[in-house]
Every structure is written in C-alpha cells, then in structure tokens.
Amino acid sequence: MSSNWSLCDICDNDKIAKSSVVWCSECDEGLCGDCKEHHNISKGTQNHKTVSIGEYKLPTEVLQISKICTKHNEKYELFCRKHDYPCCKKCVKSHNDCKSLTDMNEIIKNVKTSNAFYEIEQILLEVVENIKRISTTREDNLVYLENKKREIEAEIKQIRTKMNRYLDKLQYDLMKELMATEQEKSSKIRQLLTTLTKKGQEITKFQTNFAHIKQYASELQTFLSMKQLEKDIAVEEAFIQSLTKRDTTNQVNISFRINKSLQEITASEQRFGDINVSSDQCYLSIQKRKDRQAQIMVVALPTRNIDNLTRTLQKHINTMMSNVKGCSMLPDGRMHKLKKTIKVKSNNDGVAFKDGHLIYCSWKKGLKMISLSDESITNVTNKKIPYQAHVTTFGDNLFYTNDVKHRVTCRVYHGNILWTFSDTSVLREPCGISVDSNGNVFVVGYRSGNVVVISPDGQHH
Image (cartoon, rainbow, N blue to C red; front, side, top):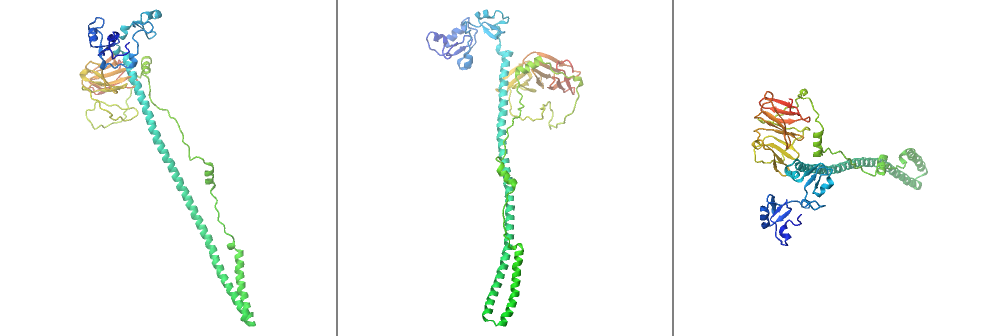
C-alpha cells in the first residue's frame, strides 16, 4: 500500500521523485504520466481503471485498509462467508472445515451495485435521519425549557404581586382601623379635657369670689354667699363623682396583635415554592432497517379479509380545485407545509417517500429515486411508465399504476416484480394508489369510477 499517493510509486522505487497524475486502485499505486502510459498498454494492467489524482478522494480510513494478507503478505484470493473474512492461499489451511469459501473476484464483482452496498448506504442515511430526529427533539426540549422557565418566572412574580397587593390591602385596612380607633378615643378624651377646663375655670372663679367675700363682705353677705357656694360646690362635686363612676377617666390603651396565620407563614415557610422536574417518555420512532427487514421476512403480515371491508365516510373536503387526482392524509390529522421544491429533469406524476428518498414516476424514464440529503438521482427501474402513473410503498415493496394497460404492479424495492393485477372488468385506468397497515392495496379506477381493494399477494380483489 502506498504511503504517499501524491508521488509515483514506480519512480519512487527507483529513487526518483515524480508527482503522480493518476491512481490505480487495483495496483494501489500512484502513477506519473510516463508510468501511466506503460500501465495502460501492459497486459496485466491494461484493464485496470484509473482515476486522476485531483478526483481521488478516498478517505484515510480506506487508504489504510490493507489489500494483502497482513499475516502472509500475499494477495487476498478467497472470502470465507462463515467467518466473514478475506483469505489468501495460505489462509485456506486454517479454513479447511469451511464450506463457504468463495473466489474474491466473484465477491467483489459489481459490489457497488449490490444489495449489500445499497443496504449500507440506506443504513447510513437512516442513522443520519435518526440523529436528526433525536437532535430535533432535544433542541425542541431546550426551547421548551427556556419558555417554561419564563412562564414559571412570570407565575412567581404574579403570585408575589398578588401577595403584595393582598398584604398591602390588609395593611391599609388595619392602618385605617388604627387611625379611626385612635381618633375616636382621643376625641372623647379631648372633649372631657375641654369640660374639665371649663369646670376648673368656674372653681377658680368661686375661689376668687370666696376670697373677696372673706375680705370685704359683711357677716350676712358672707352667710348667704356660703349657702350659695355650698350649692354650687355640691354640683361640681357631683360632676366629679359622676366622672369617677364612669369609664371616662380610665386609661385608654391601644395595642396590636398580628394575625397568627401570617405569623406562622413568616416563621414556618422557608421557601416560596418548589421547582419540580419530571421526565416524560419521548414517543420517537427509532427503528433499525435490518429489524424492519427481519420483520418483513420472518413475520407474516396480519391479514384481513378484504371481503369483509366496510366503508365509513369520514368527511367531505372542498379543495376549491378541479381535476384532483390524489391526496394523502396523516393519521393524526397534522398538516404538512411545503418546505422545499426540488426540480428534476423530467416530467413526473406520482411520488412517494421512503427512507430519506422520494420515489417518483418519470414517464418514459421509468421510476426514479432522489435523495433528500444531496438530491442525487438514481434509477429504480428504466422500464417506461405512462403519463399519470402513481406510486406508493409498503415495507420493501413498491406499487405503481399503469392507466394505459389498466394494471397495478408490485415489485421488490430494487428487485423483481412480485405480481401484476389487471382485470378491466373491475379496474380501468387506475390512478391514485395507497396501502393500508395490513398490506391491502387500494386503487382508484378513474374510468371504472370505483375504488378496488387488492389483497397483499395480488390474487384477490
């Protein structure tokens, strides 16, 4: 195996450094212009296919794979199917009991168009698609978490605002009550103080008059004044006594006792709330291609007698269009929006999706398949199909219509035709086609004006 594919290996063996212009995968060597000419006319190598160095893009991992037996340093000539291992002539001694040794040339013949090569390609596409699906769900989860965080933040703030408003109202009501109570009690005390002030002034006047009587009045005047003062003083004493018997002279106190429930909240509640984390099962359909094939090969399809099928009208849909030839509805009622338009170099009608590809009817060019990842187009079958042909898939089978020959064909994906249904007394000019979960094929007869159900084996209708 060449260690430097940019240099001509033959010249390099002669200690001459010349750049290679082509690469021969059979010889595993790079060749300069001169060596290329000799390589093209040599009997042993004239049938070898070469590729220009500029186009040679094999990955490093492939270049590092040895094309000779690393144990015996000889070319691989056989392949042991039992051990899934290439062998040279000397390796055969350790495979004497193996009955599945096959010539390596037979194994590698048309390997790039083999089903095994195709399956690896499809599995890679499937793995990429599964990674995309999982990544999409995780990205959606990130968006959900961010949105949910904002919702919870808003909810916490809203609860806090409501609590603040509620506490503010409680505070306002209590402060209002406090003010009213204080004003009421203070008003009564002030009224009493006003009365006492007046009484005090009257007593002071009595004292002044009494002093003047004592100094200036005659005995008779003094006596008569005393009698009058006794009556006045009796009235004032009676007033004082009445005050002591009522609560007007009691000490008025006001105090505050917090609501026990509120006090308990501040004492016992250490958290505003709890953030809970839960995990819901992600209903993501991830299935390996080999598992699906095993199910198709080993497990028989659950059959349903097509004679017992009944029709139930689900709904009428007014499309506001004419010449409608077909439709497809998702079982959960979701809508699909146009995401991308792919132009192809042919007229086409029916189209179906399978494993990251679109299979479409391309009239005279047969059935084509286009990859959604790189838009590369490959042939499913080159056999001509007419205008207005429709196609659908089920498992590894393809079903397509031919309105000119009034028939429905079922074939293996990249394989042989399994069956053909044609009965003009029942079905004429078939167009729209679909398959249910039991493998029953539903076909619309445009000219016969009906829907025909064909059994999975194509033998009954």
